[in-house]
Image (cartoon, rainbow, N blue to C red; front, side, top):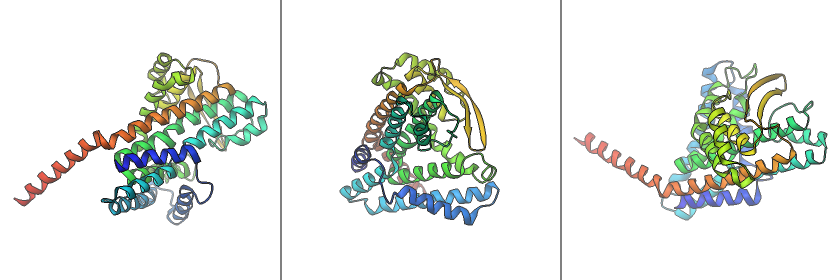
Length: 328
């Protein structure tokens, strides 16, 4: 119950306050990870694996220490989980950025819209028009609804405070070193693979929840399900396509195409059947993201007092049997 209450309270804090304006712990982790990278960098996967293990292992151990220290103090456990959840969630900020982009595009202010895009993704906005800026926003909202909302809640429910902190550390490392640049082509691979692994279940859950809540933004649930089933595995990422295909179907738009980053470009398959996104779709995307977050919160808060109890009881029973066996 303490963990469930902490997840709910942390989600409420994020919804009310958004990201901390100063002294954000995730930003502090990023600076520490950057300093560690400068010491450990070599252009090979072994160095990248060691870096990833240290950078993710430290927050996990911190979470384990916090969980052990509050094992018999439920109020302190709830407060600690709430603080951790607030720290790692980014749902309010994500919805705010989508609506801000909608206002800029609705006013025809392309320079302002291009300046805002780097708040959401790393694409080069200099030559993007309204449909491409809107597409980039919808795709970022879809993917980050998993990365910044559903996945942290999932791992917080399954693994408590260590899961919350460990997931955010892995996801932050992927953003820092997981991209395909000459410097990180090999060093960043372990971080990218770890992030892929941790997002396998949350991304698919995000896709299913997006289909389920499509009517909250005047979407067609049946159309969203059809696009999700047909297009979700066409994306080169094992996880992003799950979220983007469902969002494309829920909004009735077509996503995918050529993405230009700083120094490289990628061509993605098309997802969905409708027109290219416009400014009017961005507020609907934010509404879907919020509804998915609430649904994920309900599942995450229920897990520790339902299935989590069964899993814990089974684990304790197996441990007792193992101890009796070793005693013989």
